[in-house]
Structures are given as structure tokens and as C-alpha cells.
Image (cartoon, rainbow, N blue to C red; front, top):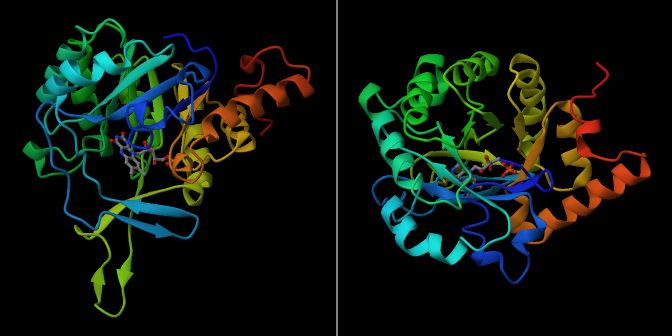
Length: 293
Ligand SMILES: Cc1cc2nc3c(=O)[nH]c(=O)nc-3n(C[C@H](O)[C@H](O)[C@H](O)COP(=O)(O)O)c2cc1C
């Protein structure tokens, strides 16, 4: 997948792009990663499923979506004309679910890539997320690689001890690129009720609070693999994005910041271009992985 610029929007934070049509021309972006899509429709978790935290937010939306067949029949026709890369974020509870979902999407010519969300619980193996062990990550990538002929991005979970070993496992099974990070597991409590503020107790932390962790992991993964890395986690402006690029990411995604400023992604594109001009660079590849450490 070729990108016209290195800025994409992150899954679950930009809908299908159509919701942001009043604010952002999709053609201005390198790509849009659409909402998490599963083989069967999912209702998501009960409310409340979002909580604001210091410099971030927790969510336990739980992959609410109408399923891949609905996506193919009803949503794809609305977005296939977008002059940008439309990437579908794919989730599942078993490797076969991911592979079947990918096989459905393979029939859509305007989807150049899919991104696997391996932070989902593996229902057959006690509910532990696929992405927290090299074997779990490998099992999903292997199944999907056999069903998906185009660019395969694997999105890594930060809720692990050694993210580099998960990255290497995904690369070994044929991932074309790795994106990171997904949300960090967190919690918030109502002290009067002495109950969690989120319906299922815990949720995923995102936003500026996670940026230093994301940046460290992108740096570690970029040194551990030879496939391109896509960095995300707390990016709110062009300087944040430049940090990820210098750390080794070839592209970035903007997530939670879209909720604060729906035009932030375009502002990041413009800010990166300005910085490159000011520093005499002709392309973003001149700064990728140039950290002096
Ligand atoms: C409300 C919400 C929904 C999300 N849904 C998904 C999803 O469906 N699939 C996925 O891989 N990541 C999902 N994410 C994670 C984001 O894509 C991103 O990895 C994470 O929020 C970190 O980036 P950020 O700090 O820029 O938001 C979601 C995040 C939020 C806040």
C-alpha cells in the first residue's frame, strides 16, 4: 500500500470517514482505518463505556459493529470513492473468524489493506488476548495470511512485557507492516459507589497520557523488525507525529485527538510538511528512524 502522506486516522476514532465529511476531505489523508469489523454483528458492551481521565480517556466500547457482510453491502459503497487508502480493522474471537472476515473483504477492490486487531480475547483459550503471546499473535496472522492477498498490517497490543518478541512473531508469519499501540488496559472508580466507572470494570486507555509508552514501544519494535512500523498512541499535533517518525515509524495514526479537534489529522499533515520544508527535507523518509540514541 502506497501512502500519499504518512498520516492516517486510527480505528474506532474516525468512524468510516463519512461522519467527519464536514471537517476533513479524505483525500488530504494518507489513509483511514475504519471501525473494528467482525465476522458477525456485535452489540458492544453496556454503558457507561467511556470515561475521561487525566490527559486521556478509557473506553470499553467492545467492537460494536454490524458485521463484515453489512460492511461489504452497505458501507463500502458509501466510501469506495474516497481518494485515499481505506483500511479495514479486523477483529475476531478465533483465528478462523479473522480469516473468514478477511476473505469477505478480499472481494472489495478498493480496500488495499486490512489491519488485524489482535487485542481481542481468544475465546477458545481462556479469553486471553491473542496479542499477548507470540504463539497467539502468530496463529491469527498465519490464518489471515492464507486468506488475504494484499497488504496485511498487524496492530500490536501494549499490554505485554516484551513487545519486540510479539512483533517478530507477526513478521515471521507474513505481516507486511506493524501498527502500535492499541490501548493500555486501565480502570477508573466512583469512590461514592465504590464501583468501577466503566460497565465491565476495565477499559482501554488512550490519548496524550499513553504517548511516552507508545513512543518507547515503536522505537523498540522498529529496531526489532524489518517491515515498516506505523506509530500511534496519543498523537495530537505534528511535533508528536515527528517524534514517532524519528523513533522509526514510517507512518502514524491519529486516534483520540479526533474527538477534541475533528480537523487534527489534516493539521498534522500540514505541520509535518512545514517542518520538512524548514529543515530542508524533500520527503518524510529522510527522517524515519533518524533518532540519535
Ligand atoms: C473509542 C475508541 C474505539 C476504538 N476502537 C478500536 C477498534 O475497533 N479497533 C482497534 O484496533 N483499535 C481501536 N481503538 C484504539 C485506537 O485505534 C488506538 O490504537 C488507541 O486509541 C491509541 O491511539 P490514540 O491515543 O491516538 O487514541 C479505539 C480507541 C478508542 C478511543
